[in-house]
Image (cartoon, rainbow, N blue to C red; front, top):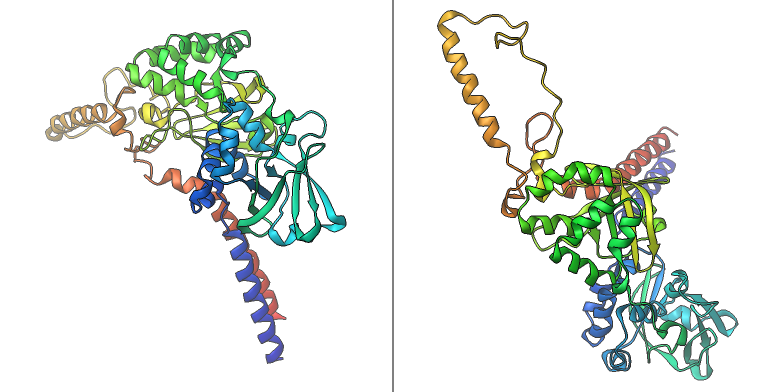
Length: 436
């Protein structure tokens, strides 16, 4: 009996440790992996510039066919636009795991792998697939479907089994479909699209700010998502906007755009913080995406808004209308909580239903009240406070400051909750095993 109980306890502990390790694993970061290999710096740089790195990092089973700096010169010397470079490099991102071992054990001698280029629907027909073929002498060749076999497996660079594999191939995959000229996104009329679909006030505000307008046009080529408030919401917000200084007006407008293209499907599968065009070092200017089924909500420590309409969703640009104006804590921390309206004071100025103070103390109390009122007024900063003060927390509903680590805490809440769930479940399993 004692031996049986000992076996059950040991098994429970091992199961607990394995599940805990599974919960605590972290997502991969392709740019960090490639940063350990300087000979791939050009490829790594373009993954970041085209925003493909973000797309790679959010996927869990993926293979990157990288080429070294010498082979990259054949691509960078051709003067392709960012959009075309993105198409070409997305053909080098396979939506399956191929480590060195798996490549040399391909069943039937060949395999057809879907790529990120195919997934974007920008690839005509099956041109976004890559054929991987075992050749004589153990060589492994790569070619776009219907294209020439001219690139070969060189070596494995980094592997995290069944999650991410970064391999080196000998040269850029030749593809007429991927390298075909694309419509220059910078020529897209962003303000025109907004004006025609219920965000005219925001579009006019953006056009009146040369700095933000230029940033939007320059960013769209690499991929951009904009969250513009509807006309009624923006009209009501304009008096607050006009009170901001010029740099803060520009920061606010940049805050409502994310430097990555997110389709509605991608937003619905995303939960967590995102950098914006206003993000700059210590000034986070980030927003958080929260989704619940078909409903997508954007939040900051100030307020929450909901996406109510899609104005355009065509790579590399997505524009969504929101029901309210999303406010960054760096500019509007004083508005963190809309306090309920105070009850109307009686005509004599005393608090309703409160006992009258003793004569000798009345004067002192009145003075104290005045002091307290003055202090409260001084503590509430105007929306136009400097960026340097943005690290101080917004005031919570009870008047106390929010925890400085609120942002970090929210980022790990889901993981922490999952861990707690596992611990409780395993404790119950352990207890039931012990009783048996």
